[in-house]
Structures are given as C-alpha cells and as structure tokens.
Length: 402
Image (spheres, rainbow, N blue to C red):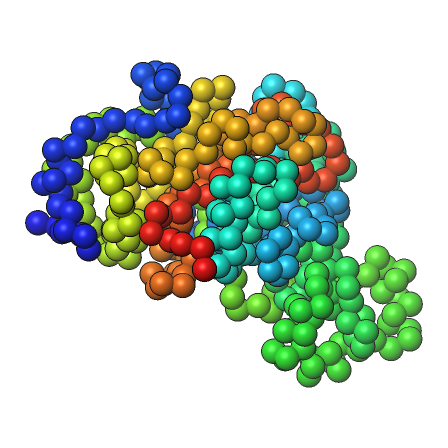
C-alpha cells in the first residue's frame, strides 16, 4: 500500500468524500468538455515552425506576429529582472470574429523558485495592478488576411513558408527580440546585455572573429535585408527546456469514472516514477482535510489521463481543476484586462507533470507548482502585437516565502 511522507494512505483517502470546491455556490453544474494537452517529441522539427501554427512546449516560441515582438518589462521577471524563459504556447483561434482567426497564447516564467514564491506573496496582497510577476502570459491574434501568412491553410509540408522573415531573435536564448548587436561582427543580436556576455563567454569570442564583416559585406548585407543576420538565427543557450509538440484530446474520450482503487493501481503500475514522485510531493504538503479532499477529487479526475500536462476549457462557466482548497483566487483576485479594462475568463491550466518532461529535478530549490491557471480577456480585445494576460500560480501549502 502506498503511504506518503506524512503517513497518508490511499485507504484513508478512500474515506474522503469526492467533492469539487470553489468560492462560488454553483458547483453542481455538469462537467464541461475539457481538451487535454499531451507532449511528445516532434516527428518533424519543421512542424513546430510558426507557419504551421503549432501548440508546443519547451525550446523557443514560434511567434505568431514575427515583427511586433514583446519588449520592455513584458520580457523579464518583475522581481529579479532576468529575461523570462519560454514554457509553452497554445494555438487557440476563436470563431467569433475575424480578428481572432489566428490566436496564440504564450507562457513564460522565471527559472528562480524564489521569484515564484515572491510572486505568490504578491498575489496574496490583493493589489492586482501593482503585483510583481515571475510568470507572464502573452496573447497575439491575427485576421485571416495578414502580412505574415498566406490566407490559405498550410499544406503540412516542409515547403510551407511564411510571407516574411520576421525580426531577428536573440542568439543566446532564441526567445526575445535580438536588437542589441555585437559591436564586432554586427551579426549576432541579443535581447539583453547579460545574454550577450553569456554568449561571448561560451564561445562567441572565437566565432565573432570569423563573422566580422568587411566593409563590402556590410554594405551588401544592408542592401539584401541583412541576409547574414538571418543566417545567424541559432540558439547558443544550453539551459532551454527540451522541445515538445503538444497533442490535444478531449477528456470525454477517456473513462468518465475512475475509483480510488483505480488510482492506487495507476500509482503502483506506472513505470515513469518521476511524475508519480512529483505528484506525491504535492500531497506531502497538505495541511488539513480540505486539501486532502480537494486532492482526492483532483487525482481522481487527472488519473483518467495521467500524462496530461495542460487542461483547456474556455467558456463562460469554465473553472480550473484546483489540486488544493487553499491558495485559490477569489473573484476579486482576478484583475481586469490590462488593455481594454474588460473581464477576464479562465482559459487553460498547466499541470506540474510538465516539469517531469522538462527534466526539472524534484529538489528543495527546484521549480515547482501545484497548478498555473491562465485567464485571458473575455472579449479577446484587438491590437497590434502582444497583449499581456494573467496567470494565477497555486503553490503547495508547504512552500514559504524566503
């Protein structure tokens, strides 16, 4: 019999009533049709390029609008000031209006667990407009007729090409706009001075001499739209998370009911113990029966498809599946849209299983979360480039602000 770090047993959990908790009273509605996201290694690397409108996790983002990239504070952690790392993106077009024919949501986060803890503390202050964030969500949308892609759907082949090359990206992280160029070679671009220094120390110091342009080549590159610069678009950083393609399936395709005995069999038979250990670490932090009952509901629902890393459900009544009773937002905690002032609605949540696929260790100082719930503008307001949305991070109750 599985016994967790605090002596909780599956037999004990079997005695708990499976309920759904929320700060609202309308909890009796039927389960909504949730789309589950699963990650797998791409069979063809070109399928994750932006002209194929992918949903993906890890690696670098496939920016939807390749020219009007985010800048300023949208790219960095509000707490430590470091450039944020790409987590995942979800291609989620809306049929309600033409301006959302193409629509992608991007999630980024700081690699520091201390910053994630500080961000949770900021959440608890109930000052949404003044919070410092270490997790950021950006939304981009385009009409069918746009300057970047053909109005015809891609053919799903390597020969599919976008209409424009896009802005240069940082040669170190491959994520943010690389508009700060090496003063010597004039070819390598960076999003920040720190990434330029890291690239220099990792080998660009030698490479730079080979790339330094002659006066003739500089003039030629300028006349040809910076062809040499485009060829330099490779990522030097070794700290990016591995890249995965995200596949979607409807939760309704799985067995609708799974008993806690089934959960126990799943826990004992599962061969990839990394995910199992990660989920146990969340349970180890429970402080009371409320969290235990909430976890029992959460685990029973997740066990229908235990490899899921994302749950998507955008509707007027959709809500996250919370692992714990504590640390949930009230309605007052969800801010209004930063761009139009309208209401936000829940759209998807990221589960901690993703950390297993990213190879994140289950150490005391490693990144960890119970779930990350993403809220977006209910009207998906229009505008050029990228709009910042909102993420609520629920951490385990045992984590304390350092």
